[in-house]
Length: 177
Image (cartoon, rainbow, N blue to C red; front, side, top):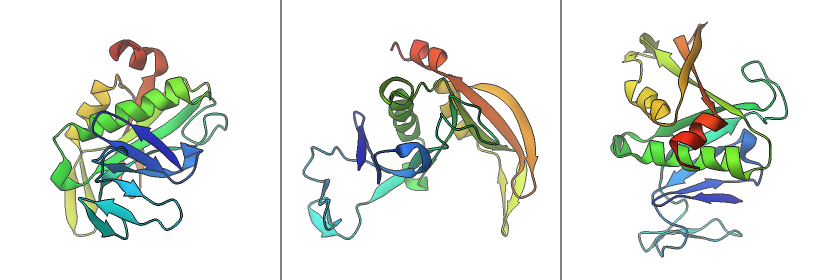
């Protein structure tokens, strides 16, 4: 298990190498009595009550190891993504979770990560029966992290996809690291 802690959040990855896994974002500190997990049974104590799974507020993670080039990322790059459950949006949790994960990736993982890329949907797209007009809030999170627009491509399912790039130097400068 890999736990990455911020001021309000805990990011939990089920393996030490978080480069190809999606972590769960918890709105609890691992030191708090509200978030206690047994490594053996997986039982959690959330809000003082035992449950089969602790209540996460979203997901976050990297896709692809920075030492292995992929279709969307060169060596020393990786893709990055996050999703916050609707009732927890617009409270700063995505930005906080992203900052702590990017700090880990850029400065603490010892993988020589230099660039992180993210994709956002642009314009209208059809998802099942519903329509979705992009995600300006997600773009704002990326801008707060120091992301710059780096092009676009068309995806048959998602429509127009914007590509964003965050460099280690820009991220560290914006966050005084």
